[in-house]
Amino acid sequence: MTNKIAELIQSRRAQRHATDTGTRVHAKLQHATRDTIAPYIKNCPRLEKYFIPNARTEVPIAGFIGDKFISRRIDRMIVDNDTKKILILDYKTDINRNTHRPKYICQLREYRKLIQMIYPDFDIETSILWTHDWTLEKI
Picture 1 (tube, rainbow, N blue to C red):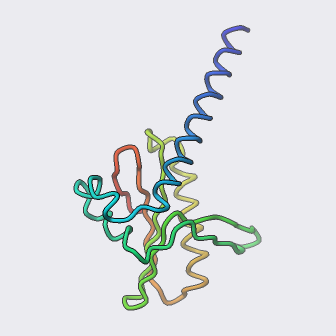
Picture 2 (cartoon, rainbow, N blue to C red):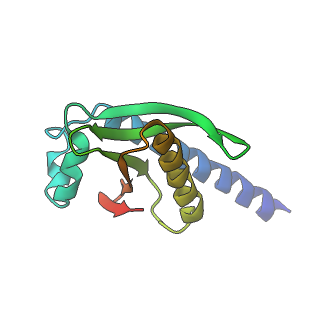
Protein backbone atom coordinates (compact mmCIF):
# COMPACT_ATOMS: atom_id res chain seq x y z
CA MET A 1 0.00 0.00 0.00
CA THR A 2 2.77 2.45 0.92
CA ASN A 3 4.55 1.79 -2.41
CA LYS A 4 1.34 2.49 -4.36
CA ILE A 5 0.86 5.80 -2.55
CA ALA A 6 4.48 6.75 -3.21
CA GLU A 7 4.08 5.82 -6.89
CA LEU A 8 0.89 7.89 -7.13
CA ILE A 9 2.56 10.91 -5.52
CA GLN A 10 5.58 10.58 -7.85
CA SER A 11 3.28 10.28 -10.87
CA ARG A 12 1.39 13.43 -9.85
CA ARG A 13 4.66 15.32 -9.37
CA ALA A 14 5.86 14.23 -12.81
CA GLN A 15 2.57 15.35 -14.40
CA ARG A 16 2.73 18.70 -12.61
CA HIS A 17 6.34 19.19 -13.71
CA ALA A 18 5.46 18.34 -17.32
CA THR A 19 2.50 20.74 -17.29
CA ASP A 20 4.56 23.53 -15.73
CA THR A 21 7.37 23.00 -18.25
CA GLY A 22 4.92 23.08 -21.15
CA THR A 23 3.33 26.28 -19.84
CA ARG A 24 6.73 28.01 -19.51
CA VAL A 25 7.83 26.92 -22.99
CA HIS A 26 4.57 28.11 -24.57
CA ALA A 27 4.86 31.49 -22.83
CA LYS A 28 8.41 31.99 -24.11
CA LEU A 29 7.63 30.88 -27.66
CA GLN A 30 4.56 33.09 -27.86
CA HIS A 31 6.88 36.11 -28.10
CA ALA A 32 9.76 34.42 -29.93
CA THR A 33 11.20 35.86 -33.11
CA ARG A 34 13.88 34.69 -35.53
CA ASP A 35 16.48 36.54 -33.48
CA THR A 36 15.51 35.01 -30.14
CA ILE A 37 15.50 31.46 -31.44
CA ALA A 38 18.46 31.78 -33.81
CA PRO A 39 20.62 29.28 -31.87
CA TYR A 40 17.91 26.64 -32.29
CA ILE A 41 17.08 27.43 -35.91
CA LYS A 42 20.64 26.81 -37.10
CA ASN A 43 20.03 23.07 -36.62
CA CYS A 44 16.63 23.19 -38.31
CA PRO A 45 16.39 26.00 -40.89
CA ARG A 46 12.81 24.94 -41.73
CA LEU A 47 11.77 26.51 -38.40
CA GLU A 48 12.66 30.02 -39.49
CA LYS A 49 9.48 30.47 -41.54
CA TYR A 50 7.35 30.06 -38.41
CA PHE A 51 8.98 32.94 -36.57
CA ILE A 52 8.46 35.77 -39.03
CA PRO A 53 7.16 39.09 -37.68
CA ASN A 54 3.58 38.60 -38.91
CA ALA A 55 3.21 35.13 -37.38
CA ARG A 56 0.10 34.89 -35.24
CA THR A 57 0.38 33.29 -31.81
CA GLU A 58 -2.17 31.71 -29.51
CA VAL A 59 -4.82 31.94 -32.23
CA PRO A 60 -8.26 31.07 -30.86
CA ILE A 61 -10.28 28.73 -33.06
CA ALA A 62 -13.70 27.22 -32.48
CA GLY A 63 -16.39 25.49 -34.46
CA PHE A 64 -18.21 22.29 -35.11
CA ILE A 65 -16.70 19.22 -36.72
CA GLY A 66 -19.71 17.03 -37.30
CA ASP A 67 -21.76 17.35 -34.13
CA LYS A 68 -18.71 17.93 -31.90
CA PHE A 69 -17.90 21.47 -30.77
CA ILE A 70 -14.15 22.17 -30.74
CA SER A 71 -12.51 25.14 -29.03
CA ARG A 72 -8.72 25.41 -29.11
CA ARG A 73 -5.75 27.77 -29.41
CA ILE A 74 -3.25 27.35 -32.21
CA ASP A 75 0.27 27.96 -30.92
CA ARG A 76 1.59 29.64 -34.08
CA MET A 77 -0.02 30.30 -37.45
CA ILE A 78 1.11 32.04 -40.61
CA VAL A 79 -1.37 33.05 -43.30
CA ASP A 80 0.21 33.81 -46.66
CA ASN A 81 -2.44 35.39 -48.87
CA ASP A 82 -0.08 35.56 -51.86
CA THR A 83 0.57 31.82 -52.02
CA LYS A 84 -2.76 30.87 -50.41
CA LYS A 85 -0.94 28.78 -47.85
CA ILE A 86 -1.38 28.51 -44.08
CA LEU A 87 1.25 27.09 -41.76
CA ILE A 88 0.19 25.81 -38.35
CA LEU A 89 2.77 24.96 -35.70
CA ASP A 90 2.00 23.24 -32.42
CA TYR A 91 4.57 23.05 -29.62
CA LYS A 92 5.01 19.78 -27.74
CA THR A 93 7.34 19.35 -24.78
CA ASP A 94 7.11 15.56 -24.48
CA ILE A 95 10.43 13.76 -24.51
CA ASN A 96 8.83 10.55 -25.76
CA ARG A 97 7.09 11.52 -28.99
CA ASN A 98 4.90 8.44 -29.03
CA THR A 99 3.31 8.90 -25.60
CA HIS A 100 0.42 11.06 -26.87
CA ARG A 101 1.00 10.94 -30.64
CA PRO A 102 -2.56 9.83 -31.61
CA LYS A 103 -4.03 12.66 -29.56
CA TYR A 104 -1.68 15.22 -31.12
CA ILE A 105 -2.38 14.05 -34.65
CA CYS A 106 -6.11 14.29 -33.97
CA GLN A 107 -5.64 17.80 -32.56
CA LEU A 108 -3.78 18.99 -35.66
CA ARG A 109 -6.38 17.45 -37.94
CA GLU A 110 -9.04 19.37 -36.02
CA TYR A 111 -7.07 22.59 -36.50
CA ARG A 112 -6.81 21.88 -40.22
CA LYS A 113 -10.55 21.20 -40.58
CA LEU A 114 -11.57 24.31 -38.63
CA ILE A 115 -9.15 26.58 -40.50
CA GLN A 116 -10.23 25.07 -43.83
CA MET A 117 -13.78 26.24 -43.06
CA ILE A 118 -12.49 29.82 -42.77
CA TYR A 119 -9.99 29.61 -45.64
CA PRO A 120 -11.50 27.09 -48.08
CA ASP A 121 -9.14 27.94 -50.95
CA PHE A 122 -5.92 27.69 -48.93
CA ASP A 123 -3.46 24.85 -48.61
CA ILE A 124 -2.91 24.09 -44.90
CA GLU A 125 0.26 22.55 -43.51
CA THR A 126 0.46 21.37 -39.89
CA SER A 127 3.60 20.57 -37.94
CA ILE A 128 4.78 19.83 -34.43
CA LEU A 129 7.82 21.48 -32.90
CA TRP A 130 9.30 19.07 -30.36
CA THR A 131 10.82 21.57 -27.96
CA HIS A 132 13.05 19.14 -26.08
CA ASP A 133 15.30 18.76 -29.14
CA TRP A 134 13.98 21.47 -31.49
CA THR A 135 12.97 19.14 -34.27
CA LEU A 136 10.13 19.82 -36.63
CA GLU A 137 7.71 17.10 -37.68
CA LYS A 138 5.21 17.66 -40.47
CA ILE A 139 1.86 16.01 -39.73
